[in-house]
Picture 1 (tube, helix red, strand yellow):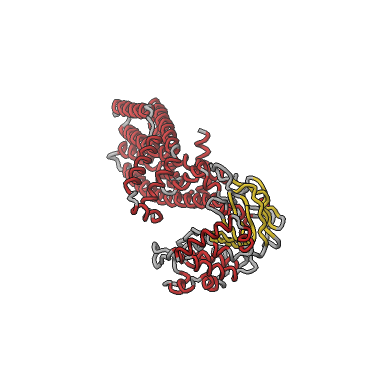
Picture 2 (cartoon, rainbow, N blue to C red):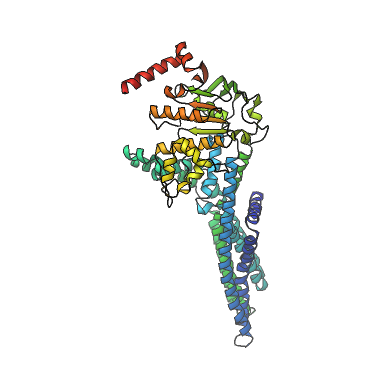
Length: 585
């Protein structure tokens, strides 16, 4: 019970934060909606007791006024509650987005427990019946039903005290049993979050573009349909549970009390009970049943929304406990970036992706990193950008430990281009100038990245959305998207970024085109600390220094010529690639 009242209080504060005016309007209309039928019941009794006297006319007018008032109150209440619900949901969604983006790294986005909690927030804004904002209507429905029940009991008790008390007790019992049953069902619903995520994954695979080619080429449609249905059935098995008979028994008891009271009124009418009073009691009994029905319907919806809100708060609280930004401000590297005995393993992995790695990246120069798949190349970049924190060891910039540095200040020094850069369905300008106020260097960045002619040909230039899913939007090819990513990095460098990370950003280009692109890129970013990851040796040979990683450790380092002379792992990989390239030519 205490948990329920805390939920009510939590929602009340949310509603007031979302819109004080709509909150007040919703409550006022709720009270009018509950009071109007009770007033009508009393007025109808007065009309019956005064017919055919002329004094019945004002009460007849009052009956009409009460019905009109109820009609108006219902309309305003539904509109206000719906608007308030949307504002509450938007407020919660924004808070969840902020909470998910607040942690320094991205580990929480790969942790099943965190994802289960975050998924509650995502489901909340897709499934209308469990959205917390729905409490604006369902909680009001519960309160409305209770007010109608209590008011009806007062009217009945005025002439039938025993039946009035019996009606109140039976109504409260039925409401309590409905709430208990609803809470159990809500808990069962939220117990299957992980399997629900899997069900949603199968659905997204089938209806969204990213996997469409593979699904059709390999004939995966029937498999996905079967997996989706099996997953959905399993989730339903976990959600559905045998229901208690107690709510049914309580409803039977309430019905029996109403029938008993009606029988008592029928036996007393015209005798000890005047016709007008009898009519008022009958109307009150009908109102009590309507209140019980409203309460029963609203209880399940309320408990589902309260359960979602509680899990939503758990998700936000768990994210708030993760490290956030703050600490020393790290500027552009003046001497070096240093990795000292750095180790890191991914959650659920079988070993370290990087193990006791020692590496020095000289400031203002270019460093290429090569190695087999799984050697730790991309992990090194993620650690440098603090997407993850080392499990041991230290990463420093000019002797300032990054673990104690302000992450936002440090990331403002970084510009990165990844092999699979995100294709933002936003304007071309937004795709290149993210996080930057100035747009003065946009054209220069586009020209340097070789995308200026594509931008010029867009229907609305820089203001064209880069997605055909939007009006006036245009889709780009894979190679053009990579150049957009390169332009974004160059634009960031022109606006103050001092460390450039290139993680296989030109994989869609052939070897010669990639080599020319890197040559141009390194020329444009001269003096910038640059880290290049590539499998193509025609590219990495242009770097000032080359590092070879193997099983998370540096095994060789030097210039292209020095590593060839060493005749080690680098030389072997270079000769193997050169021979393949010669055969292909």
